[in-house]
Image (cartoon, rainbow over the protein chains, first blue to last red):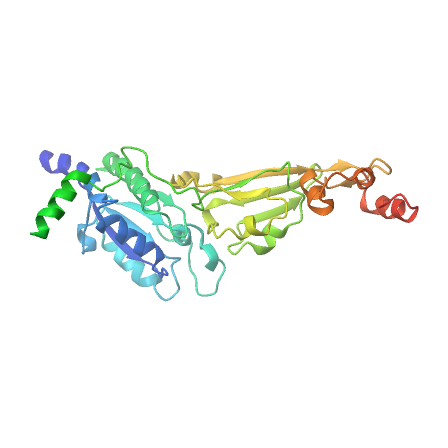
Length: 142
Length: 166
């Protein structure tokens, strides 16, 4: 058990939730993970396809009214402890969609957020910086 | 045999991964990042607040001057404020290190005060006319106009009627 907790500290798995994002931040997240220039896997993380495997969850988008229940349901499926990173200004403050009738966010009304990465969209290096902060928090939580 | 050339090129060039976060990241000079504000050159025209797409900029009047506040967490870095600023008091730096912890969310602000001057004639408060704006308006120093800079709009109008203006 000790071995697993030591290993988990060094290899958090990332999971991405799109809470009604315009896809700008999602493209940057894909860039961060997929192209060798940025290569987020150097930090020991890896994207996973199932919320049940996730340790660090990256949320993009302003939490639209239509997607809110689904996002909360998926978020509840992620086992504790977890670290939440809000990527882009939309989940942080609502961005240009703030105070719209279709928006339920900012996301910290409903979910506990740990790290904010502002930008529209944030550049891949900024996302890596945010993930590095999340990994520090993750190491303390496990 | 082209793969040998590609292999050789890749060996020669080395890894293409950027060193960040273990080293410095390259940032283009024209990258639109954090907004910077210079209260000394601002003339308080409120144009940046008017054009701000995300409502990140707020101006508030107080006793000591005009308070400028920008919340970086809702700024989309579109650059409209910098484009429309007549005196270029507001600029976009290429600083992108904006990631922060949740407890610092509401402290990601930049604040500046455009201090009021006092009218030399009646003592009423007025916004300072920066030297950048006079340069824009008169294309050079204009001593006759500069005499009117220390007057409030009301006194300025009276002085102009008396023939002290340009």
